[in-house]
Image (cartoon, rainbow, N blue to C red; front, side, top):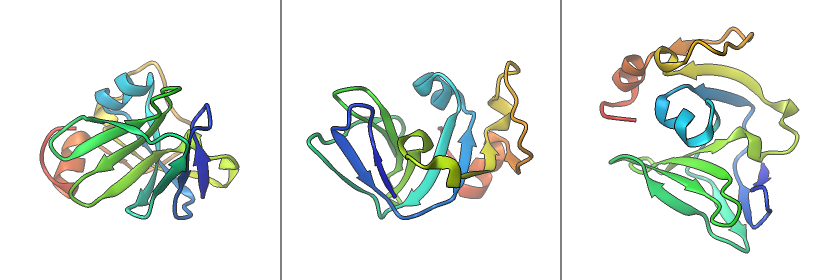
Length: 135
């Protein structure tokens, strides 16, 4: 899959995926003004274009990436597994995506709801399944 930031200076190539997950955690909502619509792309992500992404170390095990020119949110990067979770909005042709899951449902504010019926996990369930720690 091909993607790019708003200004086009950061280009992304990632393995094909169809599923989008949503993270409702307070950190994702603060970072992007709403939940993060995320495409789990694994370690096989490449960055090109005229500008390299900047990163912010948001926890002991993860960093968040953004375009230093236009500020587009690009990814959440799990450092131990080198897995990239890319923002779904980066990709053109997103009609191929389907909403597959929601995490940190216990942190979702009451002012929005999705009509899609998906599996959901609380923050405690996410940490129990994938490891302990902070977001």
